[in-house]
Length: 138
Length: 138
Length: 138
Length: 138
Image (cartoon, rainbow over all chains, first blue to last red; front, side, top):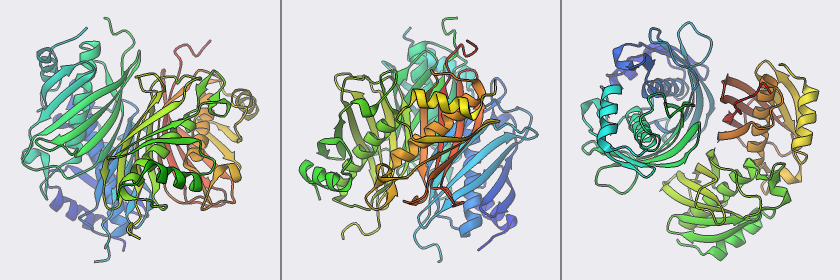
C-alpha cells in the first residue's frame, strides 16, 4: 500500500495545480511538506498569513494519509484546529511535519507542526481530521 | 467605541490589500463578511478550498472584534477550529456571519457560520480566538 | 424518528447511571440539558470544574443527536473543542443549549453554549463531533 | 524556576483534593501524569469516560506549565481540543504525556497524548491553552 514521494507529488500537481507545496517525505504514518514564502504568502508586517499556514498543514495531512491508504481522491478534511505559536520568518520556507495518530476505516487523525526552515520552535500546530470514503480498496 | 462599516473596510484594504472580503455589516458584537468565489477559490471538483473558507472566517472574526474595540492593528489570531459541514456551491458567494462570545481584556472569542449565498445550511463553522494587545486605548 | 424527552431520559439513566444531567428539551436538531452544581462539581475558588462542563456539553450533544437519529447506543464522541469564557456561578445550575449543525450518514456536528442558570452570558462554548454507526436503522 | 515533582504534587493535592492524578514526571517543558481507572471512570461497555480523559489531560498541561513558570494558582484553561482515537482499556491506568509548545507571557499552549498503560497507541490527543496571569514573578 506504500506509495512513493513521486506518486503523491504527481497526484497533488494534478489535483491541486495551484498548490506550491513540495512533498519532501512520505511514509510510516508521516509526511514532510515544504512551501515557499514570497509576496503571496505575506501580510503587511512581514508575517506569513494564517490561512497559508492552515493550507500547508492541510496538504501535509493529506499527503501522510495518502501514504497510508493509497491515492484516494475523495478523502476530505472534516475538521482542523490550528494554534498560532510564533511569528514565522518572512524569508524562510515553511516546513510542515505531519504525524498520523489514527488511520481508521472512516476517519484519519493527525497532527502537524509547522516551522520556519532553520528554526526548532514551531510557528504553529495543527490537529486535523479527514474522512475516508468507505470503499478504499477499489 | 463603535466604528462604521466604512472605517473597518478602509482599514482592511490598507492592511490586507490582497483580501477580497467585503464587509457587509459590523456592530453589536457581530459582523457579516462576504467573499467572491471564482477560479482562485475553487479546487478541482468545484468546491471552495478549505483555506479560503478559513481565511474568510478569520476576517469575519477580526472585523467583529474591531467593531468592539476599535481599530487595533496588533490583534492577532491565536487559535482557530473549523468544521467542514457541506460542499459549498462553486457559483455562489461565501457569506460569513460572526458572533462574538467574549471580548475580554486580553482575549476575544467568537464563532462564525459560513454559508453559500442563498442557502440556510452552513458549509462550515469556525470558533476562533484573538489575542488583544494590552494597551488598546493607544 | 422523533423521540420524546422521556425516552431519551430513560436511555441516559440506563446507559450513564452516574450522570446527573437532566434532559429539559429535545427535538428539531436541538437539546437543552441542565446539571446540578454542588461540591462534586466545584473546585477550590468556587468555580465549576472544566471537565464537568465538558461532560455536560457532551451529554447535550448526545441527546440532540439521539433526538434526530433515534436511540443509537453506539454513537461516540470523536472530537470536542471547548472554549472557557467566564467563571461559572458556584450556586446556579449549568444549562447547556445544543444546536446541531450537521447530521450526516457517519458524522454529526453540533455546538453547545453553556450558561449559569439566570445569566445570558455563556460560561463556555463547545463544538463537538459524533461518529454514527453505519446501520442506524437496526 | 524549576520545581520538583513533589512540590507540584503537594500543590495539586491542596488545590484539587478530589483529583486522583499522580504526577510521574515534570520538567523541561514536559509532564507525565497517570490516573487510576476504576468504577468511577468507566461507562457501561467498559470504556473510560471522555470527561475523565479530558480532566487528566488538563491536569497534565497544568503540571507541565507549573513546571515552567512555578506555582501559579491563577493559571486557567482557556481552550481545549480533544480527539478520541481508540477505546481505552478498562483495566489499565491512563498515562498522559504532555509537551508544551509555547510558554509566552500571557498564554501557554501544549499537547497531550493519552495512553492506556502498556500500549503505544494513543487513546486520545489533546491540545490545550492556558492563560497565565500577568505578574507571574510575584
